[in-house]
Amino acid sequence: MTPPLIQPTDRGLYCAAGDFHIDPWRPVERAVITHAHADHARSGSNHYWASRDSLGLLRRRLGQRAEITGLDYGETRSFGPVKVSLHPAGHVLGSAQVRVAHGNEVWVASGDYKRDADPTCAAFEPVVCDTFITEATFALPVYRWPPVADVARDIHAWWQDNAAAGRTTMLFCYALGKAQRVLAELPTPGPGPIYLHGAVAPLTDDYRAAGVTLPATRRVSEAPSDEDYGTSLVIAPPSAAGSTWMRRFRRPLTGFASGWMRIRGNRRRRGHDRGFVISDHVDWPGLLQTIEDTGARQVLTTHGRADELVRYLTERGLQARPLATLYGDDPEEEA
Image (cartoon, rainbow, N blue to C red):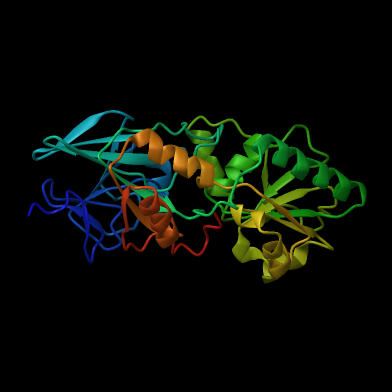
């Protein structure tokens, strides 16, 4: 029996016919990377291939000495008899799906992706294939995203109300991707300055260097010691909540931007004043639409609700099975 074109190993997803890995979780000789989040881009491999748009972020993640070859979307690269090309995934800046073609067989490894419009990255493009490897982070019918413009207006209105009361607005969200998307979507002007946590600021600089237009921001670390922050919006990663870093802000009101906020109880459990439903992952309708758009005969599911998605698809006549990976274990990614 012919082995699968892509299969999991102890180092990551491996294409034996082309002798390369996709988003390996251990060092390998040749790694094709979907995007710069830590659970997909890990240091130590000898050579990396990734989208050209992601190079700045990947060099920050992997180190300046890492050997990284940038590919344009749609550009084909041969790995022996295997043809590989990258296609927009719409997840974060530079995120890509990996199309792998060998003979008459085509597989697509999507990495993480979303279908919603996002001014900070290239829009998702469905890629026709025989086998589609998809994330299942939000693979339940309850997860349906509201229009991002509406959510951004809600964040802005909350910020205005807080500023009128002289209270700092503290928004927690993932430092890479979510923070920059929120910045790009916010109506302007705001009632005060925007400050960034030290984990958010350099990544935001990388977005600007890639040509993404974002509003003016300041680093918290560069603020005067007597800064009041009373009308400010402060964007920070979830790990900053409850830390000593928070002591400089007097009576902040906190919000959390994540797809998990679709379930009302999650906000209460996390102890935030507000929850905003905005995600860089595909929602349930988008997930089903994408599977249909690919025309795939076989669907392999990774991280999240993988088993639930498999049951749903097999009940509807598709070949589907879960694929064991280490994706989704980035503690800083809050979907």
